[in-house]
Image 1 (cartoon, rainbow, N blue to C red):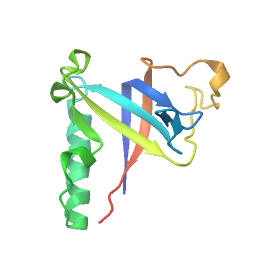
Image 2: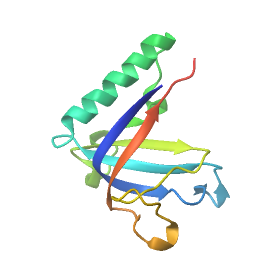
Image 3: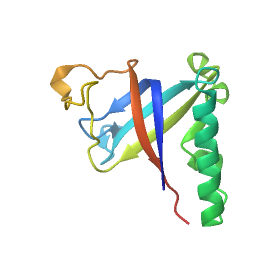
Image 4: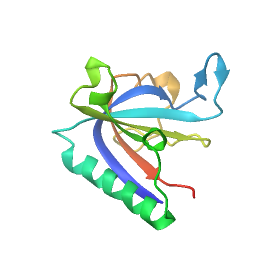
Length: 128
């Protein structure tokens, strides 16, 4: 497992206060997708790619692209993701969401919404 800091990422499809749902059914997980600009976040993206490769080597496995959290936006077919990469994070445990002063944010604060910019910390892991 490896923790990665993601600064100034655009937030997409956030379900940080309630479980995400798909087709009207709860997934049982909290989720968010972080959108990173390939130019602005080049070093962060390289670091994430390195950590993913390291985990795969340690576990002696090669994951197919659809099982890796980091995706190339140019391959998505979505024009708004051209020149970007996305990283999807999910967890069964509610994530800690805090403000700049490290005070907790709750859903009613309306500070977290699709398209806002956030700093995130995610944990990369793999299962053999």
